[in-house]
Image (cartoon, rainbow, N blue to C red; front, top):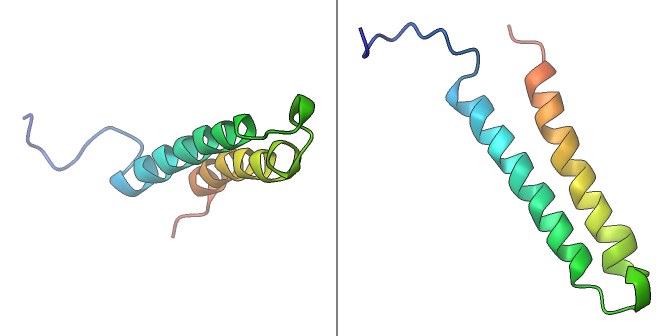
Length: 70
């Protein structure tokens, strides 16, 4: 029974990979924010690029989980 193809798990491999990719993008975004050398993180990396990456990392899994499957 352990090798059955009919699984009760609601996510397939593609959805799990998209969730992991979103998590990785969020971690990269937070790391990019720490690379900013301006005082208090007010440079391009801390104010623009890092938050955009974090936002993409949040939105990507949400859209992939709520997309309409045909």
